[in-house]
Length: 437
Image 1 (cartoon, rainbow, N blue to C red):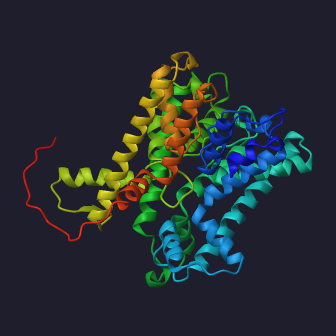
Image 2 (image 1 turned 180 degrees about the vertical axis):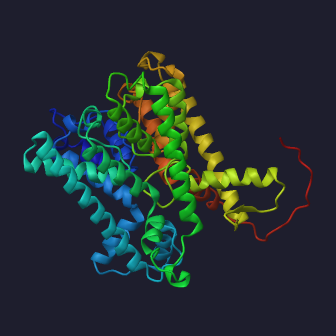
Image 3 (image 1 turned 60 degrees about the horizontal axis):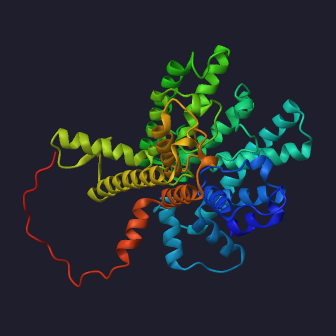
């Protein structure tokens, strides 16, 4: 639907129609809240085209299942039990008594947070940069939704480079990115936790999932911030005031976790920070959030699994809680499939793309292609600048990686596996010795 609407003449500024591959790429990037672009969003599309992109971002951010169920409620129809179970499982909250209350809370919380962000941004665009009220409001709404959904789409040709020293703009967008990426389950758990009550039974508790998501998000944020400050102080941040360097480095430490905005030229980052950024994009946001990647909790379980193996424990234990073996196996499967997807996408790009598309970044042609593929898988949107120069076949490859990264490699594998008929009986075969490591 998005591709068809973006192809139509009323969506683009230039006479004629957008190329179908470019329209498909833009629609996939918007729906999967990625932010990679082949044409400049602010100048290439009309207000109608921008509205289409914004709606795709909103639908993709909240999740197709959530929005479709919400529209069923508006139409007065009753979702099936299967729909309700999928919705509850998608939000990661099996303890919710009413799917309807969960749905309303998700949608209303999203709209409230996006409205607050839009109001702050619109005020700043109007009073700080002289935009007329209507345009300031439109820009505020677009960037607020794009930030909360971790989409990374911007209406400025240089993303947010021109606002790197403005804490009102970068601070608001950074907060929206962090809230959207932390996940609805964590957000609700923290809101419902009555920390001021002395009685522990009435205070509630912070679940293990919330602890892992918040702690790992903080570790990854600091793990990106300090290398940027140290490595780019006299490089990509050279010539700026100390306060502006810190502000730009902090914002750039937030965005690799699937947001895609940038206040530092990505193609000027040192090879060390390019590789650290790729790692951050691969890990991504938290489960049940609007971002992509293998997810923060998945990465924690992988590390805990290694520790359990080294210390010769039979079970994976985190914060005095045992993680089910099924969850450990899922985390391992997600990580392996994600690695294979990035590897396959990179190899295909190397096969179809000419090294002449390189923009000369410190990472070189190899680093640029790998960076592009990881950014697509993690639905991040950061790029060294080669996206518009990709061939049409290369754009289709990246669009496929974006789609598979958003849906999830494990979900796709399970869908393919369930297509085959199950065995008539569960058979346990004899064990045999296999040497690994």
